[in-house]
Each structure stands twice: as structure tokens, then as C-alpha cells.
Image (cartoon, rainbow, N blue to C red):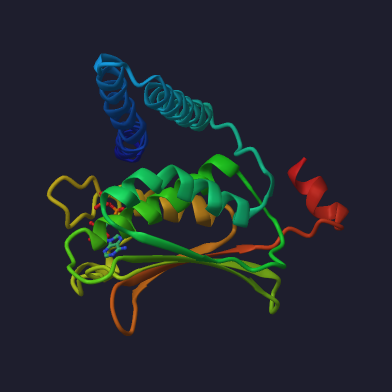
Length: 242
Ligand code: ADP
């Protein structure tokens, strides 16, 4: 029991580091950019204002993550609400926009018009999307060909579920690691923590779904998760989550 508890705390600590480092890095970068624009002659107030807005956005994100971790420690149940995944995809791409520009990644979406909502914790589901997108960008950072990120949402009518696929044209999964992708601390990156996919996997499973990853026939990899569609008309589902 002690080992389990210590491991769980270690995973939690690692997940805090993983999720908070990103916005903190953004805050420092934009803080420096802001100083730069204010110090220009004449000062570029518009650019400085944009940098400050990004600082506020990243700070909000860090606070959200910390609020969430606090919730996890208190063992609070996730806040379940109907989530529009198409909307969440668009908003998450906006978050990743800088990183995509910096890495010359082109993003494309194929969003199903008839996508039902899913019942879930918006912040957690956004963490999953962001993790998959950041992994895809990293997997493409070393290739010389076109860097294409494609996010597709689909409504599967058999069994009423929703599938989101994040496809990249990167280096692909290495054959050794393919089985261990979702293990905590499995990483092939020198600076990697190996927590991202393990956290994504846990989040999707706790939402009653599943997450898989595989190489594409041509190039790169696709990570795909499926979640049950939310039956808006069913009282039973609403009762169960009230
Ligand atoms: P980290 O990114 O810190 O390594 P993750 O759990 O997010 O941790 O990923 C684990 C490993 O899975 C990565 O080190 C990499 O080898 C592999 N991986 C994840 N996403 C991709 C991808 N889109 N393309 C190729 N390999 C990937």
C-alpha cells in the first residue's frame, strides 16, 4: 500500500510539473517580449498589449491546472458537463498556435457537423487534446518533409460514440516503444517525462472511453480516442451524474 501511495504521489508531482511548466514557459517568453516592445523606440504598445494578454491567458491556464490538481488531491469527482469536442478542438488549436508556427506545422481540421456532445470534464479533456497535439508537433520537429497535423472528429452511429483522431506526419512510433506508450515514465525523448500519454490514457478511461496510438500506413502516427456520446434526452444519464 505504501509503494502504491508513493508511486501515486510521484505521478501526481510529475503531472503537476508537466502541466504547469508549459504555461510558465509561455509567461516568461511573453514577459520578455513585452519588455522588448516597451523598450523599443518608439514603444510598440499594441505588441506589448498582445504579450500581456498572452501572459494572462497562460496564467489562467496554470491556475486551472492547479485548481484541477487540488481537486484530484481532495478526490473530488471530475466536474461532468456536456462538452462540445469540436469547440474544444478549435480552442486547443488556438492554444497551440504559437508552437505550431514556431515548428512550421500546418494544421487542418475535419470536424463532423453532427457531432453529439460528450459528458466530461472540460479541463481534463482539453489536457488530453493539448498533450496529443504537442506530442505530434514534437514528432514532426525532426522531419524535413511537410509537417501536417490533422484533427478529425467523427460520430460513430454504431454504439453512439464519438471519435477524435490526431494525425501527424512525423517520425512515427518506434517499434520497441509501441507497447509501452501509455506506461508512466516511458519516454524516448532526452528531456521527456513520459507522463503525457499515461495521464491522457487515465483521463479517457475515467470518462468511459479508450485511447489508442498507431503508425499511419504512409508516414507518422495517429492517436485516437473514443468517448460515449451524451444522450441529451435521457434522464437516467443526467441523474447518474448529478
Ligand atoms: P513524453 O512526451 O514526455 O516523452 P508521453 O507519455 O507524452 O511522454 O509520450 C511517450 C512516448 O511516446 C514519447 O517519448 C514518444 O516516443 C512516443 N510518442 C508519443 N506521441 C508520439 C507521436 N505523435 N509520434 C511518435 N511518437 C510519439
